[in-house]
Image (cartoon, rainbow, N blue to C red; front, side, top):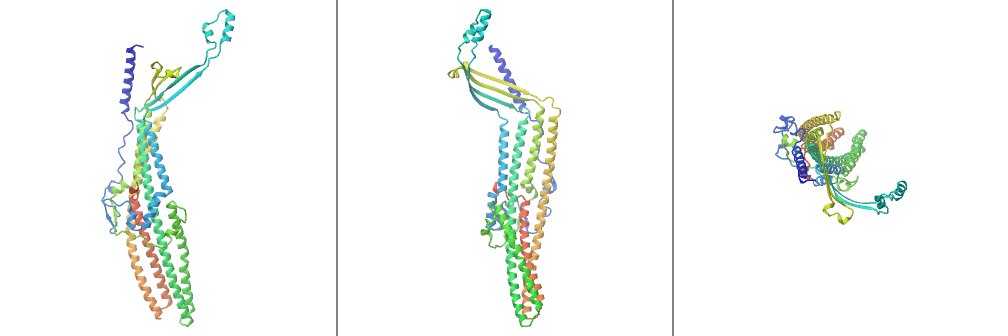
Length: 498
């Protein structure tokens, strides 16, 4: 082969590679322009529509570890344990690792594939002397080559080299696939954050239920003891003939009714203890010793910081996950559109072959091969077009789901703010009722001992007092749970854990 022909071939290869590089800068499909603007007026407002008048305050950045504002070390320890050991959260972390590994695989698809190989070939030629002798008998001659083949030893061939292949991303199909995989990994990352938000809120609400049930159980026992003392007093007065037998029966019924409330409260406490144990990745009963002793409810902060709707939309993990899935769906359109165009794959081999392993390094044993391979599905009967339309519909669905997620988040936050504000007012009135019921019970008991009022009046007053105390504990617990729901609706509880 002449030098000029070699130069011509090298020039053609260079031109082909240059053309591939130019085309590889082209990326088909729509570029992602961001999520659609949903409820612009609501998301850009300074405050939420249902912002309470009291109990909350605008803030530039609400604290992520909101549970620390309740001042309960046991609650802090439980939430930290759940974030570290909860099986559902560990499953979400595993899904994130899977998505990142898939992204790594997709990124590698845009790079050349190189593999090394080595082989030793040993072959023995068959002995053709018998066939050649028969041919000699027929024509009286013998082929010199056939004579030489008789008794020839086995042939050996040694080969070592590298194979390479590279699909040139002419129209950006691989780049779009990588873009989709990256967005999908970010969506799974946001799913993990959303799982952390939900888990922290669930642990806090279960803990509040436990402390509320314990407080109500203490009140029920105290009420039962007080009513038992009243029953003994009535029996003494009945023995002296001061009160009728019906008063004894009425008070006995009151004592038994109060004692009957102890059984379901004990059952609820057991369920709350087991729920907290499972949420923190432990077996039921593991927290009985640590949490069985009654303790007061956590203390609410004087004011709850709430940032503006735009910050909430940016921070909520479910909204970020929906936006990233929209970006992934948009990239998949270009991934399918690239199938409309030709694909060019560069195949190559560099190696050495020789009959003796010591001759492999010799220049004369060197060999190479370069093959540009073109593939184009010219006629696929609309399969690629169908895939593109399917991807476009998937993008539209993802956009609709994003809009619905934003609207649901705004509704969630506004409802949580409204419930929190109304429950604060309710607790204030329950406190007034409880104070009045305590004062009324004390006065009525004094009047009954002095004989100025009947037992029926005393029992009614005691029932009112007990109900007021129970209602206040339940009201405070509901206010705390509304506080937790508010933090969840604001998308808090994950940033410091990332």
